[in-house]
Structures are given as C-alpha cells and as structure tokens.
Image 1 (cartoon, one colour):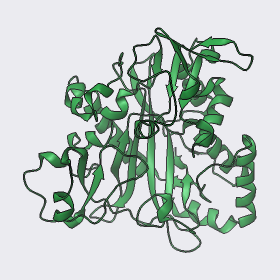
Image 2 (cartoon, one colour):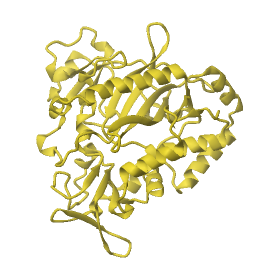
Image 3 (cartoon, one colour):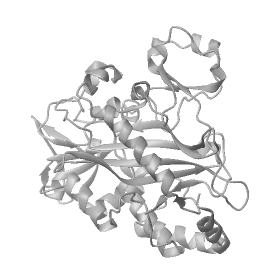
Image 4 (tube, one colour):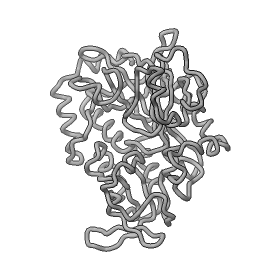
Length: 398
C-alpha cells in the first residue's frame, strides 16, 4: 500500500526466503498452523491508519453508551444462553475492515464484522517477529498503531489475562484445542503467559468451584477463564461430554465474558452509523426490501468463518427463510486489490484488535491482523491454489 516499500519488498522476495520464514514459524511451537500464512506483510500508510483508528473510535462511542446492553438484549440466540456475572465492559474486541476505494479513488476502510471475543493476539506477535527476522522491514513500521512496544504489548496482555493470579489457576478454555486451526495461537499464549490450555471436557465442577487435574493427578482450582470457545461450535458438539455449562453459576472470573460474543457481533451492525460502516439491517425489521438488492449480502447472525453468507441475494431466497430474525442484510463492500504481488494484486482485510484495560478503564487498539485474498471472499475456500494470500499482519507507518 506504500509503493516504495512494496516495490523494494517484492524485488527482494524469493521463494527460498518464504519457505525459511514458514519453517521458522512452524519450529517455534513445533506445530504447523491449520491456515495459510501469506508471503508478505502489509505496509499501512499514515492516512489509512488515521481512518482505521477514527473508525474504531466511532464504533466504541456506540459500545460505550449507557444503554448499549439494553440495545443488544435481543442479540442472544436464546435468552437462556445468557451467562451469569456479566461485567461492565468487553475485554476483547475485534473490528474487521475491508480496504476499499471511496468515490475519489482514495483508500477507505469499511467495517465487515465485529466481535466481542479474543483473537490471535499472541500469534500475531510471533508472525510480525518472523517477518522481521526473514525480511528487511523498515524499523519505523509496527503492528501496533500507537507506538506500543512489543514488550509493553505482551506485558499488557499478561496483566489483563493473568494479573496477580497463579498462572496455573488461569485456563485457556477451548473445544479440543489441539485440533483447532488456531492452535498455534493457543501454544503461543501458553508460552508467554504460563496459563493452562484445557479442553472443556477436562474441566471438573464441584458446587460452584471449577478445577482440573494436573499431570500428577492433583486438583487445581480454576480462578480465571480465558475463553476461546465459539458458541456456534459449542452447541454443535454434543459428542463432547462436559460437567460444566456456561450458564452455570460458578466462582470464576471470565477474562472476556461470553455474553459479549453475542452483544458485539453482526447483531450490532445496524446500530452503527458512520462513513466507515455499510448500511445494515436486521432482516425481520425491514418493511420493504431495498430496490437494489443485488448490492447487498445476506448474513446469518449466528455463524462464524463466513458460513452461510449469501453474496447473490434474491427476494425468493429471503422469502424462503424460516426465521428472518436470524439474518442481517448488509450493503456489499467492494474490496479493492491494492497489494501488488508477483501476479495479480491481492485484496486485504484488516482486523483491528482492541483490549479493555482494567486499570485505566479504557479500551484501545493494541494490534492488528491482516488477511489477503484474490478470491470473491476472504476465506480459504475462495483462495485455493493461490499465492500471496492468507494470514498476515499490517505494519503501520509510525
């Protein structure tokens, strides 16, 4: 996106460098990720960084409103799914922006989705570090948009996830974590924080207490849960036996309370009014469909990884839906292919990764994740057999 740096990077790129870079990432935790890692980082110019931060601020203005919980009470798939002891602010937030062109041909970010849920905070640190070790990255570029150093970034996450608690009593909770595509982030998290990686099937419950058995068979009481379980998957996995249900009243602190997964989600999009947010509607509230329906996408409210999204919407398709309250109609965002590669340019999506800090009671952007694509959508199935696509990191010009 910054032509001088892109030109230099591409001229010095080689397949040998890329393979050495991948090998080094895999060796860090003796694990090959379940997703493709892109050949290049993105170089994000100051103006686009300014827009991204402005967009995040505008979204946070809505989330910080006193009536936000009231506004999003309808976000829960079922009222009985609400988890007790919800806190006042979401700990982790992810805002995904497609990079487009405005009417003047200038770059502009457009919000695609948002999540009140953790993302690959620790893997992104590993990824940026390996890009630097294997390629010539200018020193004044960073994945942190606000002059945050890597050491301060890691210390901040340690403070918010672990704090003064014994790390053994903090668990990263997942469904079969070693089989997840994002397992490499779990391994990086454990390596940096010392917390316990645990499948929900291994979590024991006695009264209001939760515990697990360590390698020696000793009970370890759980005081904090860093939750990485996605609800959609949880309720599809009846085969995984568990003693603990999220709706149980238990004596633990959620590091990232599960209710924010619903409150800050596709459900939130219609409440956001900004030049950075495409028009979005809860389908069941529309009295009349837009006349330019071909310019909209249809999204299930309760799905992940792009599942169920319809790019070519028709009135008949909408009429056939059994429950319109489970869907969002959103104006299409046209990604612009802006990253020059060895063949055709790649489109990109930038996830701004935010954290709510307990001491300051403020939420700020601390990192980012970038995904490159040459397909109709960002996902893996649209980029088979392509190069210069996949997981990456944006490097902000500071």
